[in-house]
Length: 279
Image 1 (spheres, rainbow, N blue to C red):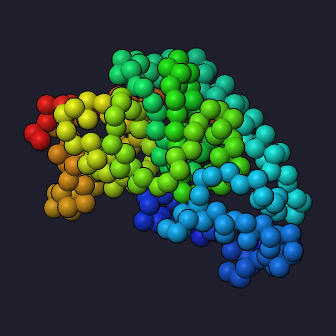
Image 2 (cartoon, rainbow, N blue to C red; image 1 turned 60 degrees about the vertical axis):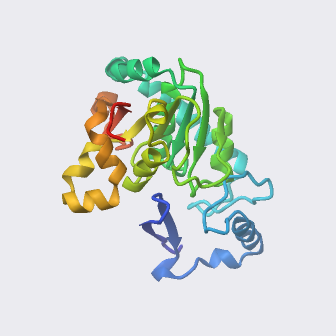
């Protein structure tokens, strides 16, 4: 049995891509199998002109190969992902973590979002992505708001899993430049710096920023990890917003009581931006 390796890179979208390679970097022989070749051809059909993976579910996608070499039916994969996310939801509802999360929930509920937009959750075949989805579902449990999501690595099984939880798919890569027309909570833990800057840039007015809440990386950290000149050049809107940002940190993952922390929402906080900034 040949071993596979994977290369990891962050593309221009600001999202992480994982690309599998065969032994010594060669394509897997499985690609020459007629059924797998058809599946790969169908996967190519999911690729947009910008090189991103389309989030539109395709019923013609054939089962892919598992590491065990056995074929896995797409429906079984979705069922397992749904079950895994539900299991993580139960863990997040444990008393210690749920009680520690309450200050964040209070801020979000006081903001009264009318929709939740999720960027960069990633492939729901991964544990980190499942934890992140479980968290945003918990956040929305009492709000019961419409939820939208986009990630360029999403495939048909990810889209169906999201659909099972009532999450709609954003049809194209907005690069986080969505201009809000209603109170919107952006859920984007571990996204790239420029995506947060894009959210602020697209909504840079007192009226629009009053409708924006960000659940994601601590924006103030970016100022501390680079020179002031680089920060001003790369993220001018984050820099201008910092004086008006209020932070409420998510609780430590240690409270989940797991043997190994998932590192799914480290350095993540709920952030509101004041409308009294210098525009």
